[in-house]
Length: 404
Image 1 (cartoon, rainbow, N blue to C red):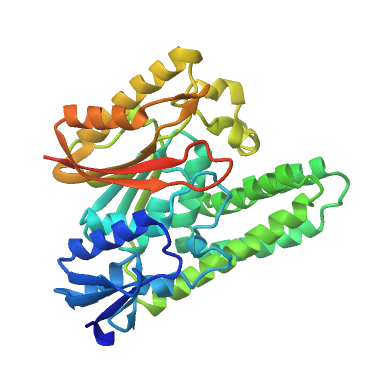
Image 2: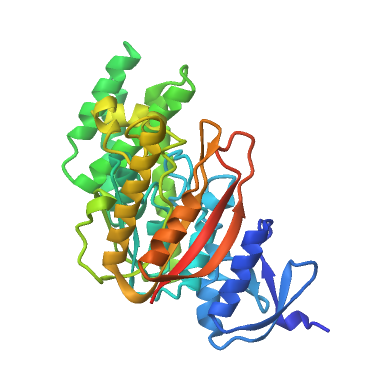
């Protein structure tokens, strides 16, 4: 018979089998004895060797033996309706984001400790970098797309510059108020000039991202005022930063450092055997055109879309050559990942088999074969079902490899 004193309860939003699997893996990573009760919504825990540390780090448990977890408090610092978009996670509507809850759990399962360094060579919108930062883990993130590196930098590096950002926001509001609303193109041009004139790079990046969000709003809702969108986005972003700052001070968070750079995973400028763990999701470019998806943002940054297309993994070539080039590029990428990862550490790849011209591309099988040939052991293989009518795939795999 279970005791209410020992009940450890899952978050209300945990609803998929893979989440229940990761929740159990979290418990096992902390050497906790448990029994599932209450229709899979709660666990009766019998022994927690380091209860305080578990309460600080757990991702999937809202309550641990009657005490709220730190994560349950972090997720309340949220201006959106989604539990996964707390703090600065919501910045920019990026397609195919990680769930931060999943990333937090994987960091626990892989036993990445505070002060160690985690890498995501396909950083995307920076979910790993921000979640690692909250746990006191240092993060290195690279991506070939400047849109991705900009989002990731602003999410994780703006907090240090909050007073400067607030001051600049007041200056911008005054200057933008003087712009005569002649035409949208003129307004965009004037706002761009004002943003480009900001001297501190981190502050300039913040307002540049607010501008890119306004471009995104405009591409989806053409009648929306760019000026109003830019101002409201900047104000909301600052409000999230204030919540971040309050959370850090209230719970005395020792934030990890982040290093974000625009780089190609096929040629990482990272020393060999220097990384304590890797979590990443390679691009599904053979089925999803990331350049086209971020076309409005890349154009706003001054890129020629056709020129950069050949630089992205999965967008080179056509037909069978496109698949062959993708496989070749991923093999090189995984060899680079192997080079920088320390021995006895873990690498988690979240990937699915894409469909191209109604044909399944066996990316999962390729990934497993490459890592086994590199000398890794596949220690966990978890199915992650993807729901949604318009998704390009219906299932991913969470593959956790150990470098022996």
